Image (cartoon, rainbow, N blue to C red):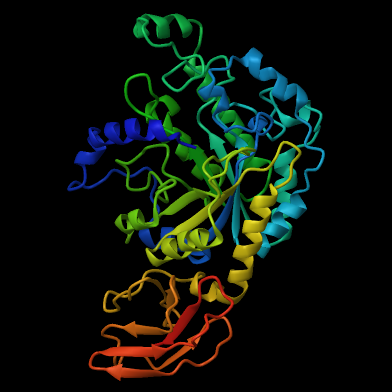
Amino acid sequence: MIKRRCKQLLIAALLCSPAMTLQAQEKKRIGNETAAQKEQRMAWWTHDRFGMFIHWGLYALPARHEWVKHNEQLTNEQYQKYFDLFNPNQFDPKSWAKQAKAAGMKYAVLTTKHHEGFCLFDSRYTDYKATNTAAKRDLVKEFVDAFRAEGIKVGFYYSLIDWHHPDFTVDGVHPLRPGNGVNADSAYAAMNKGRDMNKYRQYMRNQLTELLTKYGKIDILWLDFSYPGKNGKDKNDWDAVNLLKMIRKLQPNIIVDNRLNLDEYEDGADFLTPEQVRVDELAQYRGKTWETCQTFSGSWGYYRDENSWKSTHQLLELLIGSVSRGGNLILNVGPTARGVFDYRAQNALGNIGDWMKANSESIYGCTYAPESFKTPENTMLTYNPTTKRLYVHLLEYNGHLTLPGYNNKIKYAQFLHDNSELKYTTSGEDIVISLPEKKPNVEVPVVELVL
């Protein structure tokens, strides 16, 4: 995923890019899909709202961030020990899939290859893969089979970046990047002598062809990421237009993220990807198609000593907050080097699942509320346009709920978790719902309003 300090450079570059000047112009198109066809293709995704991200690779062994190779500027030789020792002898994708399903997640995306270049799948184009480790297994195939068996749609994450490949040129985020105080231009030129991005682009196309032809129908493709500017890489480095055309040809119904950076094309991506943003920052995406990617803690890969784990309440706020602004949430797990979910992740998934069992109707098929309904203080609203039910999520509980301007707009009120009636009175244009003095045994109680 994008490292925080890289984001600032990316945003600055985007603001200065030609794509930002096209807002008042008609955008170009790559294909000929109509708006109605796209809506139909995306329908399951915008309905399901909640997915699991899985970041897993050799970086689970050092267990101190998935960007450890970058952070510590490790050479391929220094990083080799993790390949030699990779042995996920407790890997059980069926357990992963069951935990995802129990948490209410409807789709899952696995890192088939992260920036380190290590492949979890049996690619014919590299020896740097799981089948050549002690695992001796195509971990991607087992993931696909296990999650499909649970009725969960499957997606692949594929890093556009590859710090292991000999033809991927050294840039500003590469582990071999030159240090401070040197002539950067000459240093980059020397490091990149003999490297050929044309060869790397073909390698990337070959691997994506494998991923999109060997594992059946793939529902989502998460490509990561472009970082334009001096000593960066952007769409031209990936030959992004032709790459996307190839992807669409191989998997016509696949849903693709926006990190090829084809912003000037109307059909250059299917959804936006705000990363690790606060709930209150998501309001700017209302009316667009988007998915926020979030972690249980700070990093994406397994980080043994990280202590910034979010509470169940915070995680539910992310989920509810995403849907209340018309978007999706994909929540990440970083399995250990042995192939299991950390106990903290398991606990968090279980707690989310407990809430979803009783309250998922306020998530699936829902979006933001009509503008005529104001959001009461310390609540979040979601709305199902098919059933015409409005859901009030009580982030704080104080024994009563005032709904401003709701008089003559609702027919009935009840708690969602047990369908118990809630009586209410009117006060001018407002409705006041009487809540039980004691908060229900639900992390975030939900009031369901029949309109």
